[in-house]
Image 1 (cartoon, rainbow, N blue to C red):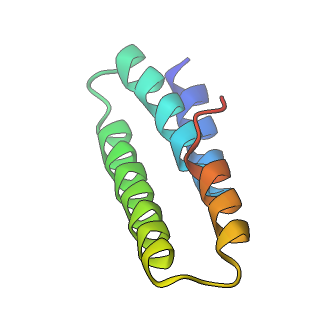
Image 2: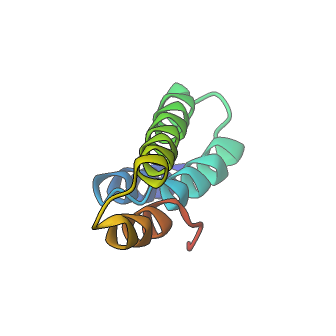
Length: 82
């Protein structure tokens, strides 16, 4: 079962769906707590989510013509829609 969560997490990361990836990886880590890949990939998701949030706040602060499109993409990549 842990392998399935790892595969889902990997696929979601490639699709830049980091919150969904993180949720799958956390489930996998609970099934296989001694597997170091889960911790590494969860940390990667946290980093990617933090980067998106930072970029969104920067765009919000300085304004941008495509801020709505950016916000939509940000929401879709950080919302937890497993």
